[in-house]
Length: 188
Image (cartoon, rainbow, N blue to C red; front, side):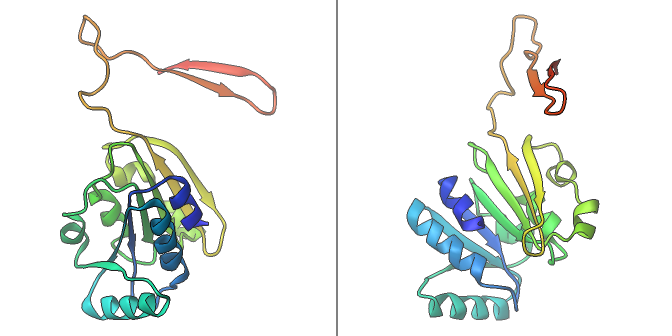
């Protein structure tokens, strides 16, 4: 499912995190999606032992992975324009990884796998991204051990359209209530 989303998004920069003993199915799927999109697939691992295990498993599956080793801040430092980011919620530093990721200008899809309901209840996308990016939509899917998915909107250079008074233009939001059929138009 995750790999199909990456291919459908036409992700040019796919980044995932992996730790020793992790499942390889997502990694193999992302590598296949990467092959179809023609972009880069990079795996961030915490140490050399994890890198060795990951590379051996991927090569056994016929893939040649690109791996970055290190702490989240240093590992993510050189990765610019991330379109698709998959982090494992079992890692203690998954929030830091999301916070330091340099997302692409056209937006990004962020996925937290192994997001059990306990973790998901304490987890808030807005607090992790520190208001740097606009969350277009987020959803928790009870697939496997849980997937928490967010679509981050595209960045606008210059901070938006300006009028003559220097104020940003207002935004109108349309919401349909499925139960009553009413339409709400809200000015933000």
